[in-house]
Image (cartoon, rainbow, N blue to C red):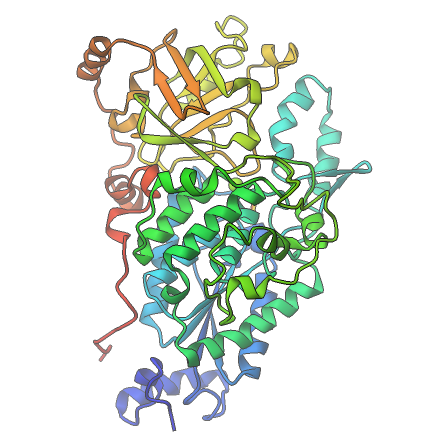
Amino acid sequence: MADKKLRSYDWFGKSDKMGFVHRSWLRNQGYPDDYFRGKPVIGICNTWSELTPCNGHLRDFAEIVKRGVVEAGGFPLEFPVTSLGETIMRPTTMLFRNLASMDVEESIRANPLDGVVLLTGCDKTTPSTVMGACSVDLPTIVVPGGPMLNGRFRGECVGSGSFNWAIKEKQKVGNYSEADILEMEIGVARSQGHCMTMGTASTMACMVEALGLTLPGAAAIPAVDARKKVMAQLSGRRIVEMVKEDLAISKILTREAFENAIVVNAAVGGSTNFIIHLLAIAGRIGIDLSLEDFDRIGSKIPLLVNLKPSGKYLMEDFYYAGGLPVVLKELKDYLHNDAITVNGSKLGDNNANNICYNQDVIASIDQPFKKEAGIAVLKGNLCEGGAIIKPSAASPELMKHRGKAVVFESMEDYHQRIDDPDLEIDENSVIVLKGVGPKGYPGMPEVGNVDLPEKLLRKGVQDMVRISDGRMSGTAAGTVVLHVAPESAIGGTLALVKDGDFIELDVKGRTLHLDISEEELTKRKTAWTAPEPLATRGYVKFYIDHVQQANLGADLDILRGGSGSEVTRDLH
Ligand code: FES
Ligand code: MG
């Protein structure tokens, strides 16, 4: 007979009318009556979608996870959730991350699930599912879909994402033809999987492994490697055990786990988007994490992983070198090694005996790839709520810089004028982009690393200081100040910057300063008027009304915290 302790018992265990209803319709799939009764019901939360090419293989993966669930005595039920395809959705997937998380949360809670497997891949599909799962708090395991194989083009390794940012230069300066670009398109995307640079998707995979939400070693395995399928099947087995052990996600996601993730993100050279997503996840599970924690905990950690965009290799190389377990072993003096992971063991114990097979890809802690990594959190009158920069992806000579602002009021304004030969701009200028924050765009798109003006590219200029309230792709690099809070659309100081103002960036001193007098600043503040709201109905209006600033993770205010897994009312 059914185990009364299972949440699903409430649906399937009873012999009354509703027990009949819940079981009967499910049996139209042809299940024998003892196939699910009394067994832990495992939801397989699938972000598969043909509109999310990075997750295109997850339909097959769900079947493999199911094998593991059945083997371990569970009953798997796969369900689709909103999937966010980074390269296709407009205006930006970030606008929908919170919406997808609501879908995940409510789908889990409303259904007879005892445990959940999250199938993830492309950038936002990891944080959105984890955020939703946190707000319910059932036993949860993540199966990251895995990166594509290394991109290949005319004998060279090329990284997905990272190459995009060089296309303008290749076309304008390197004389790339249409045919060259066509040939390259499939060369950088030659297998199933997500971006194979240390962009946001790979960063998110490393994040969930560091948090203890995956089986050890899951993050780096390429999507098409047979060992990824083994990992999926083992995860299916393990989630059934987790239900029996009542190992809810809140038992894994402790303050220590979050600190571990910050350390690891620094050592792998992870994406700046990591900050926003980790803050949002912390908000859901009730851990008090702040922007300053990222600097305090992460900025002294050396960079160990030599992957694009901070280095030269790609995820496939990372996996062959030993993957994240080697990094976790190297970092043991910086980590909370007692943190419990989904396999029930401590992080330190899981990773004590790993071997590095290529020290050029994963350096040792004694001889790191770069001495300092992580994220620098800037403060100053230009960003009272904070702003961030990723020093490992920036130019050392620009880390302390004073330059004249060249201001673009919007993305459209930028596109219209940036290549104007008469635009007054040189390599010392500071490009300021407004209107790309959470409320302002809306959705905080990845545009912070705007291309340099054509005339400066032709002169050989490769980097300039760029400042915005937007984000940047995890695959991008440059001296780019991001996530300026408060954003310009709500009247942050960024909104008040004018052409010709001097801006001072001092990464070492952690400051970002707009060099105008207090009186002038106040005058401009008084004269400022808020832009027209960009939506008057629907989800987008709801988003604009409720989204928090970047330094709080850009989650909706009403979504912080959780509501648990209890559903007290029946449907009849
Ligand atoms: Fe999906 Fe990069 S576009 S991971
Ligand atoms: Mg991205």
